[in-house]
Length: 201
Image (cartoon, rainbow, N blue to C red; front, side, top):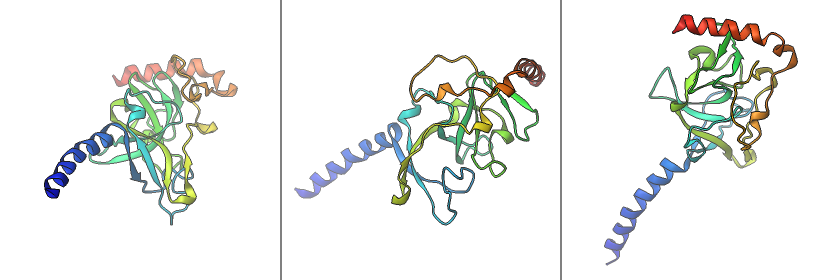
């Protein structure tokens, strides 16, 4: 009698577990140095983070979120990056084929925190929101590194111009503003970006 009961428990438990992984989230190991210092600040210690699928169920990401996404370069690989700009934002690039990019609708601009040591949008351009699989909400291992992962954009990477988005009030990340020194040239930059996009289409 015990074996059939155990078997029933397994048969019921597996679908529940799969559903939780698909809908809620899971723990994943972070490899590499592209997100230093936020993740893996000590190369000898590997961070494990909780990736929330639920947080991105509606593709509603905010500037500063650390996300997991399918690599545009290799669909078999998942990468972890920070959302720096959203659709409609104008961002200054770091070594991309054009100096400024206006993020197209349904896309975002992602970067690693370790500038110069990251394969990100500065290489492959804006990424589709459909490639996002989860948001990293906290470091869960090792115990000395337990902490939430706030949604913040480094000051040097705040977009030059922000696209129009309805206020969500989720985490205040929509309050990031461009510096005054960059805003004075934003209109000419936006015109240049729009011209570049027309040429690329």
